[in-house]
Amino acid sequence: MKDFDPTKMSKEELRAKVLELRKELIKLNAQTATGTTPKNPLQIRTNKKNIARLLTALRAKE
Image 1 (tube, one colour):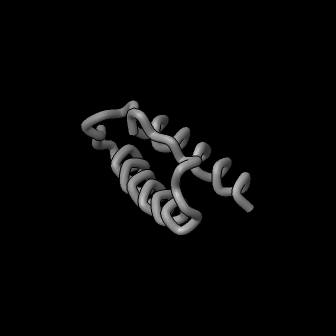
Image 2 (image 1 turned 60 degrees about the vertical axis):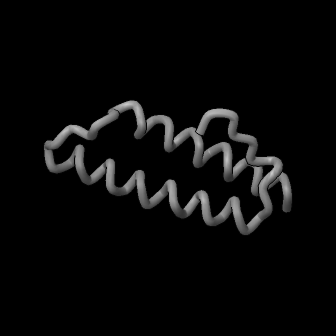
Image 3 (image 1 turned 180 degrees about the vertical axis):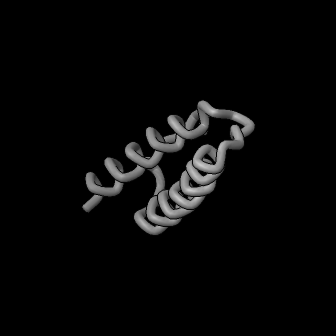
């Protein structure tokens, strides 16, 4: 998500992106729980941070 600016997104876009990232995070967490390593282990941390950024921007718009 380089050059990612959540302040320019609408509320619906923010909610959809949060949902998408949460689904991806669930898949990555399931991979680590079963013992297989994901292609990019750093992606878990990045997804968590991006979700937090999106939720912060969403709360600021409300």
